[in-house]
Image 1: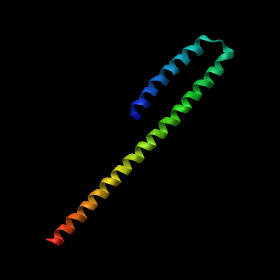
Image 2 (image 1 turned 120 degrees about the vertical axis):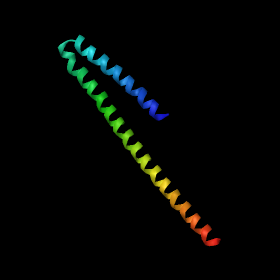
Image 3 (image 1 turned 135 degrees about the vertical axis):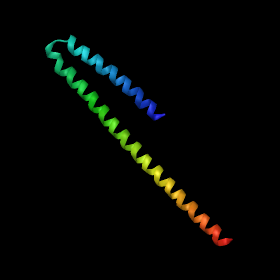
Image 4 (image 1 turned 180 degrees about the vertical axis):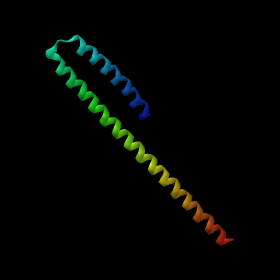
Length: 86
């Protein structure tokens, strides 16, 4: 699912980060700021994705909890109606 896809992206991001670090070490001084900027952009995009993902998971968990509470309340009302009808 989506979680596995995000985890796969994390692994790819780690590879890009490691390769970028190696390139920064190998390249000349004039190219280092360009490499750093590119790596910073990758990290920023990843942090944004990770934050959005965590917020959505949290909202889904809250919605699931509310749905369970609603279902419990509804079941309680059905039980009460059954008692009244008996």
